[in-house]
Each structure stands twice: as structure tokens, then as C-alpha cells.
Image (cartoon, rainbow, N blue to C red):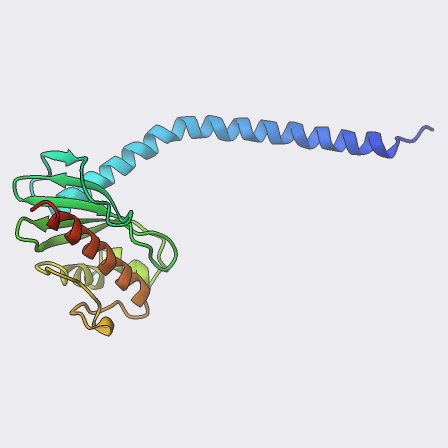
Length: 184
């Protein structure tokens, strides 16, 4: 009975692992090629819904020349009633992608949170379709100038247990207001 050498054994294991990895990588690539267009379409739909939520009637054009406010502002849409500004402030867990509607007088028309990974039951309340979430988002309507939570001397009531998320949303709104102010 001949035994396999250690080198051949390790080589056989390595080649087996390489083959398995190649098959799994090819399968993931195939799945990605099928799902990527669907995901892009869903993201576009969410963005359109967010624009319509904060800017009644939608937008006429997407602007390309704007101040990114340190990278927080990613897109700006204009209409005859104001602007919808997509911002991405850093929340507790990761960035929060949100749309901020601002009229020509510099007043917040509304906010809509597109994507987040905030803690369920705490920071996630900001985006929830509940009375607490709607109340939190609703308090920003009509605000102008600099927006801050009450702990920082502002008028915004922070979400209980989610001050970092509340501050991040204020930071995003402030970036949107500053961006739009530069259009005057």
C-alpha cells in the first residue's frame, strides 16, 4: 500500500479548494448579472418616490453644477417649486441616504429617508412609516437657517436613544440648505 506524500496531499487539497472557489465565484457573478438591473431599477424607483414626497410635482431637471458640501450632497433636482437635494450624512451605523425638499425661500418642504442601516427601534424610527417616524420627519417642515437637535441648542426633538441619528439627519438638512443657498 503506497501512501500519498505530504506535498501531493496539500496540492490536491489546494486544487480542490480552488475548483470549488471558482465555481462559487462564477455562480455569484451570474446571479449579480441577473439581479444588478433589477436592483438599479428599484433604487431609481425609491429615489423618484423620495423626490415626489419632498417636492410636490416632481422635478424638471437634474442639476450637475452644485457645491457638494464636503461630499454630503450627491444629487440636486430642480423644479418650479424648489429643489430636492440628495444627501448622505453619516449616521450611527453607516451613511443615511435621504432626500431634502427646499423651496426657493430656503424653507424645508420635507425629508424622505431612502436608505439606512440604523438600529431597529431606535435610529430606524426616523424612516419608519409610523406616527413616531412621521412626527420626527414632520418637525423639519418649514425650518430654515441652521437645523440642530435641542441638545445642541436647536429646535429639533431628537429620537429617544438615537441622538446620533438625529444629529446626522440635521447635518444632512444643513448641507442641503447650504447647497441650495449657493444657487441664489
